Length: 214
Image 1 (cartoon, rainbow, N blue to C red):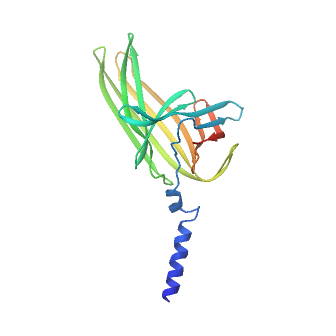
Image 2: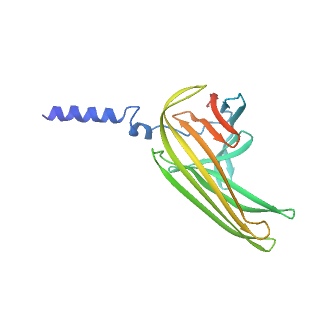
């Protein structure tokens, strides 16, 4: 009877550690931070190209040693700790030839570990004076996580991917600049050990076509 219990326990452990199990996915690296000169290349359905390249792996920026990525022409500062992937947010508003910083912070990009069905919201507020006039901003970011059993792109097919949908809504109030509401939507698919194999933004949908991670 004791031997039967041991066999059943081992079988249960092996089942939980299979490539299909949540336990196995927890041990996977879905957002690798490779060394300088690593890159991901993408194409959309019309053949247009996009790219992400690692410009620096250990760069001191805004109080953090982080990775600097050229994300399709825009610098993307990435810092990772045990519980999250953070990116640096910098937003300015211009009035009468002067630039005012309205957002300057490290913010959660992803919470770790990735979990099927996870949903979280970040709310940032700031109040400053612009040319002596009160200005306020509220940025509400909602992130949802969904498991994809299979995902195929020109570079290959992957199992147990996560789709990350990010909605960022901005509300601004100012007599000088006027009241404004804006929003942006971005989506990413992350594959184990490969990172971003798909992303979409206002310019289109891009699928991984080539990568080299060092």
